[in-house]
Image (cartoon, rainbow, N blue to C red):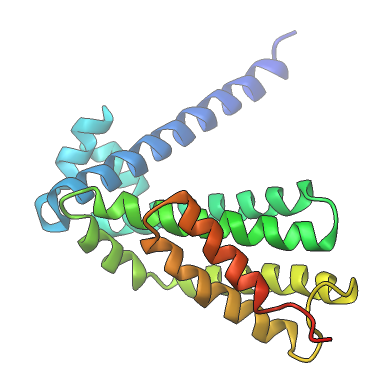
Length: 202
Protein backbone atom coordinates (compact mmCIF):
# COMPACT_ATOMS: atom_id res chain seq x y z
CA UNK A 1 0.00 0.00 0.00
CA UNK A 2 3.03 2.27 0.26
CA UNK A 3 4.23 1.60 -3.27
CA UNK A 4 3.01 4.95 -4.61
CA UNK A 5 3.22 7.35 -1.67
CA UNK A 6 6.61 6.38 -0.28
CA UNK A 7 8.66 6.88 -3.50
CA UNK A 8 7.05 10.29 -4.02
CA UNK A 9 7.79 11.29 -0.42
CA UNK A 10 11.34 9.99 -0.83
CA UNK A 11 11.85 12.03 -4.01
CA UNK A 12 10.54 15.16 -2.29
CA UNK A 13 12.82 14.55 0.70
CA UNK A 14 15.87 14.08 -1.54
CA UNK A 15 15.08 17.21 -3.52
CA UNK A 16 14.60 19.22 -0.33
CA UNK A 17 17.98 17.99 0.91
CA UNK A 18 19.65 18.97 -2.34
CA UNK A 19 18.04 22.39 -2.18
CA UNK A 20 19.28 22.85 1.38
CA UNK A 21 22.80 21.86 0.36
CA UNK A 22 22.76 24.33 -2.54
CA UNK A 23 21.47 27.15 -0.36
CA UNK A 24 24.04 26.49 2.36
CA UNK A 25 26.83 26.29 -0.22
CA UNK A 26 25.88 29.65 -1.75
CA UNK A 27 25.69 31.40 1.62
CA UNK A 28 28.94 29.92 2.88
CA UNK A 29 30.87 30.75 -0.28
CA UNK A 30 29.68 34.35 -0.49
CA UNK A 31 30.54 34.92 3.18
CA UNK A 32 34.03 33.40 2.84
CA UNK A 33 34.88 35.36 -0.30
CA UNK A 34 33.67 38.62 1.21
CA UNK A 35 35.76 38.00 4.32
CA UNK A 36 38.98 36.67 2.80
CA UNK A 37 38.98 37.30 -0.94
CA UNK A 38 38.30 35.06 -3.92
CA UNK A 39 41.84 33.65 -4.25
CA UNK A 40 41.97 32.62 -0.59
CA UNK A 41 38.88 30.42 -0.72
CA UNK A 42 39.06 26.79 -1.85
CA UNK A 43 36.40 24.24 -2.71
CA UNK A 44 37.70 22.02 0.11
CA UNK A 45 37.10 24.76 2.65
CA UNK A 46 33.63 25.46 1.29
CA UNK A 47 32.76 21.77 1.55
CA UNK A 48 34.05 21.59 5.12
CA UNK A 49 32.21 24.75 6.22
CA UNK A 50 29.02 23.58 4.55
CA UNK A 51 29.26 20.16 6.16
CA UNK A 52 29.44 18.05 3.01
CA UNK A 53 32.11 16.01 1.25
CA UNK A 54 34.28 17.65 -1.39
CA UNK A 55 33.15 15.09 -3.98
CA UNK A 56 29.55 15.97 -3.22
CA UNK A 57 30.26 19.66 -3.66
CA UNK A 58 31.79 19.03 -7.08
CA UNK A 59 28.57 17.29 -8.12
CA UNK A 60 26.82 20.61 -7.63
CA UNK A 61 29.44 23.14 -8.75
CA UNK A 62 32.77 22.90 -10.63
CA UNK A 63 34.48 25.90 -9.00
CA UNK A 64 34.15 28.88 -6.66
CA UNK A 65 33.29 31.33 -9.44
CA UNK A 66 30.31 29.21 -10.51
CA UNK A 67 29.04 29.13 -6.93
CA UNK A 68 29.29 32.91 -6.70
CA UNK A 69 27.43 33.32 -9.99
CA UNK A 70 24.63 31.11 -8.64
CA UNK A 71 24.57 33.10 -5.39
CA UNK A 72 24.34 36.34 -7.36
CA UNK A 73 21.50 35.00 -9.49
CA UNK A 74 19.63 34.03 -6.33
CA UNK A 75 20.10 37.52 -4.90
CA UNK A 76 18.83 39.09 -8.12
CA UNK A 77 15.78 36.81 -8.19
CA UNK A 78 14.96 37.66 -4.58
CA UNK A 79 15.22 41.39 -5.28
CA UNK A 80 12.97 41.23 -8.33
CA UNK A 81 10.45 39.11 -6.44
CA UNK A 82 10.47 41.61 -3.57
CA UNK A 83 9.86 44.52 -5.95
CA UNK A 84 6.97 42.63 -7.53
CA UNK A 85 5.41 42.03 -4.12
CA UNK A 86 5.80 45.68 -3.17
CA UNK A 87 4.19 46.73 -6.45
CA UNK A 88 1.25 44.37 -6.01
CA UNK A 89 0.55 45.49 -2.43
CA UNK A 90 0.28 49.18 -3.30
CA UNK A 91 -3.00 50.77 -4.36
CA UNK A 92 -3.03 53.52 -6.98
CA UNK A 93 -0.56 53.76 -9.89
CA UNK A 94 1.16 56.65 -8.09
CA UNK A 95 1.43 54.58 -4.90
CA UNK A 96 2.85 51.64 -6.83
CA UNK A 97 5.48 53.81 -8.46
CA UNK A 98 6.60 55.37 -5.19
CA UNK A 99 6.61 51.99 -3.42
CA UNK A 100 8.71 50.29 -6.10
CA UNK A 101 11.22 53.13 -6.34
CA UNK A 102 11.54 53.30 -2.56
CA UNK A 103 12.10 49.54 -2.31
CA UNK A 104 14.67 49.65 -5.10
CA UNK A 105 16.53 52.52 -3.42
CA UNK A 106 16.73 50.57 -0.16
CA UNK A 107 17.99 47.49 -2.00
CA UNK A 108 20.77 49.61 -3.49
CA UNK A 109 21.74 50.99 -0.10
CA UNK A 110 21.77 47.60 1.61
CA UNK A 111 23.72 46.02 -1.24
CA UNK A 112 26.54 48.56 -1.05
CA UNK A 113 26.62 48.52 2.76
CA UNK A 114 26.81 44.74 2.77
CA UNK A 115 29.86 44.73 0.50
CA UNK A 116 31.62 47.61 2.25
CA UNK A 117 31.17 46.06 5.70
CA UNK A 118 33.40 43.13 4.74
CA UNK A 119 37.18 43.21 4.14
CA UNK A 120 36.95 41.92 0.56
CA UNK A 121 33.45 43.13 -0.15
CA UNK A 122 34.62 45.49 -2.90
CA UNK A 123 36.42 42.66 -4.68
CA UNK A 124 33.24 40.58 -4.55
CA UNK A 125 31.18 43.49 -5.87
CA UNK A 126 33.54 44.00 -8.82
CA UNK A 127 33.44 40.29 -9.64
CA UNK A 128 29.64 40.17 -9.56
CA UNK A 129 29.37 43.34 -11.61
CA UNK A 130 30.85 41.43 -14.56
CA UNK A 131 28.30 38.61 -14.20
CA UNK A 132 26.48 38.08 -17.56
CA UNK A 133 23.26 37.53 -15.60
CA UNK A 134 23.39 41.17 -14.58
CA UNK A 135 22.35 42.39 -18.02
CA UNK A 136 19.29 40.18 -18.00
CA UNK A 137 18.40 41.34 -14.49
CA UNK A 138 18.76 44.98 -15.52
CA UNK A 139 16.42 44.42 -18.44
CA UNK A 140 13.86 42.78 -16.16
CA UNK A 141 14.15 45.65 -13.68
CA UNK A 142 13.88 48.25 -16.44
CA UNK A 143 10.81 46.52 -17.84
CA UNK A 144 9.10 46.30 -14.45
CA UNK A 145 9.63 49.96 -13.61
CA UNK A 146 8.65 50.92 -17.16
CA UNK A 147 5.28 49.17 -16.76
CA UNK A 148 4.64 50.87 -13.42
CA UNK A 149 5.49 54.25 -14.97
CA UNK A 150 3.19 53.54 -17.94
CA UNK A 151 0.28 53.00 -15.55
CA UNK A 152 1.18 56.20 -13.69
CA UNK A 153 1.27 58.13 -16.97
CA UNK A 154 -2.19 56.80 -17.87
CA UNK A 155 -3.51 57.96 -14.51
CA UNK A 156 -2.12 61.47 -15.06
CA UNK A 157 0.36 61.40 -12.18
CA UNK A 158 3.49 61.19 -14.35
CA UNK A 159 4.45 63.38 -17.30
CA UNK A 160 3.56 62.07 -20.75
CA UNK A 161 6.06 64.04 -22.85
CA UNK A 162 8.87 61.54 -22.23
CA UNK A 163 8.55 57.81 -23.09
CA UNK A 164 8.12 55.56 -20.01
CA UNK A 165 11.14 53.56 -21.15
CA UNK A 166 13.36 56.65 -20.83
CA UNK A 167 11.83 57.58 -17.50
CA UNK A 168 12.55 54.07 -16.20
CA UNK A 169 16.22 54.52 -17.11
CA UNK A 170 16.21 57.89 -15.36
CA UNK A 171 14.82 56.33 -12.18
CA UNK A 172 17.26 53.44 -12.13
CA UNK A 173 20.32 55.64 -12.63
CA UNK A 174 19.13 58.30 -10.20
CA UNK A 175 18.46 55.79 -7.44
CA UNK A 176 21.84 54.10 -7.78
CA UNK A 177 22.98 57.04 -5.66
CA UNK A 178 21.05 55.47 -2.78
CA UNK A 179 23.92 53.02 -2.48
CA UNK A 180 25.94 55.80 -0.87
CA UNK A 181 23.11 57.46 1.06
CA UNK A 182 24.22 58.12 4.65
CA UNK A 183 20.80 57.55 6.22
CA UNK A 184 17.25 56.30 5.71
CA UNK A 185 16.06 59.90 5.52
CA UNK A 186 18.48 60.66 2.72
CA UNK A 187 17.10 57.68 0.78
CA UNK A 188 13.59 59.08 1.21
CA UNK A 189 14.73 62.50 -0.02
CA UNK A 190 16.37 60.92 -3.07
CA UNK A 191 13.18 59.05 -3.96
CA UNK A 192 11.13 62.24 -3.53
CA UNK A 193 13.53 64.13 -5.79
CA UNK A 194 13.39 61.38 -8.42
CA UNK A 195 9.58 61.41 -8.40
CA UNK A 196 9.54 65.21 -8.64
CA UNK A 197 11.45 64.98 -11.90
CA UNK A 198 8.56 63.02 -13.40
CA UNK A 199 5.72 65.32 -12.36
CA UNK A 200 3.40 66.42 -15.21
CA UNK A 201 4.07 69.87 -16.60
CA UNK A 202 0.98 72.05 -16.38
